[in-house]
Amino acid sequence: MAEVIVAFDVASAGEAVALADRLPGLRWAKLGPVVLLDGGPAVVRSFKQRGVRVFLDMKWHDIPNTVAEAVRAADRLGIDLVTVHALGGEAMLCAAVAARQTVRVAAVTVLTSHSAEEFSRVVGRPVDDLEEEVRLLATSAARAGVDGIVTSPLEIDVVKPILPAGSWIVVPGIRPPGAPAGDQRRTATPEWATARGATHLVIGRPILEAEDPRAVYERACEVAA
Image (cartoon, rainbow, N blue to C red):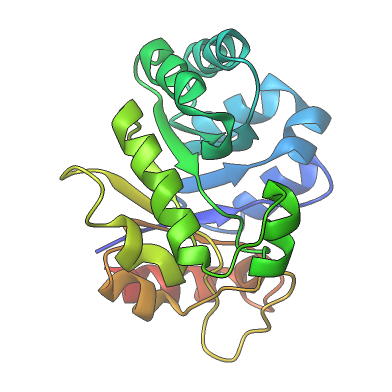
């Protein structure tokens, strides 16, 4: 089974909280830079006061000391999960892991919006096989001791054998059948990702933009259970 994380990728903290109040039983919220910059630590506290676990998706990619201090700050704020970018290197990943107390650290491999051609431009060399790039990044992250990996649904089978038992596999790019992909290139349905071993499914627009967000959220939770 997997847990559903609702991605509140909206324009303001107020909008995020208002949408959350339309989802009774919400267990996880993903907050990104827009909502955090608009609402500051108060928006995190608003979700925590509602009994919602907070996934702060900042994809930190900086020098080891800076990332370690960011992880410590997240811990103090009561955040439950943060992301660091595996491209930041093993020293940075190790620093993030060493700094954590209760917060979990997940490493991002290749963004779901990237094609092989786009990722080639990121790393400055030809990339023909995104799966191999994900494998290399996930292996480095596993050596560093991260608590989980963020990966597209199409690479679940790649990362699962690399990770220790109990690791989280956090999967964005989740779309119910018939939902548009938007700016995501590598997507799958909740059923497909859960069957392959995802532990957490990140779903945003298909829930938040639905006529009945609660019904879509509850259906996703049923499918993932």
